[in-house]
Length: 129
Image 1 (cartoon, rainbow, N blue to C red):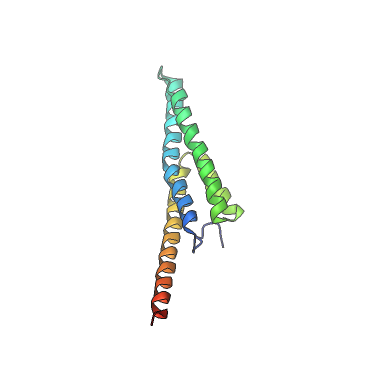
Image 2: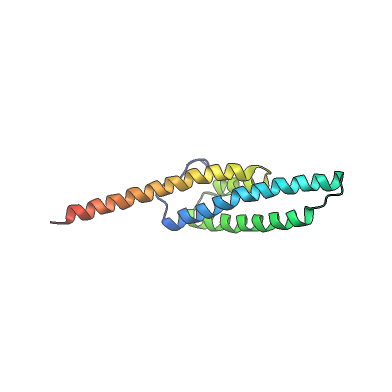
């Protein structure tokens, strides 16, 4: 499996971990871009919002790292895929790409879970006299 392939058959807690990571990836990317903009404004004008945006971005980045570690533990990504998802958090617009990759993986997990549930219900219905 390459680092861009999506695993199927995820447990519900794995899908929840992916959803949490995905939901924090976009705000983290936006806060990073705003922080970069604030740092440019600090150097060129009297506007200094770097301390506030730095704190906001720092909290979101810590949340991203915690949710990334949880998702890696639950989904059991190979090292290359886990490293890719982590590196995307360090790049200014990487969170947007992480959201896209994680959304695809989350949807595949939900579809696989629904298929398993439907298959189980059909098996129970077939066993009934």
